[in-house]
Image (cartoon, rainbow, N blue to C red; front, side, top):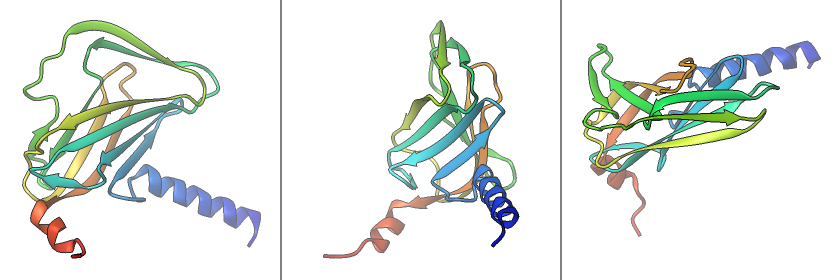
Length: 161
């Protein structure tokens, strides 16, 4: 295989990853300086169970990058139906203090913000997820389709022993 073909394949794999094509458990998006990836912990979104949305921002440039926050909120996650009806927003029913805070990332450095929800108040089904880091610059947005499963579906799939 030629080097040109290998580069083309690498570009296609990276493009698929940026679109969330690698796995429903992780979404990746990037700007010229910052990359946002979102992972769901414990790995799948389960209706009525605890969920953690891990928003991880990495400085992919060769110069320091600063995220500026005006409140204690560091991110938000929204779930919408395929008809674009929002059914969940992590920040709803939460209060955030007005507190200025900057996070400066050295080249290659990563910071993680965990948004926890217990229980996840969303019915099983397919949703579009939109994750955003709320600091400035507001260019860190990740979007993909995810499935929320029912806890009974996981119990049925688990091996008995």
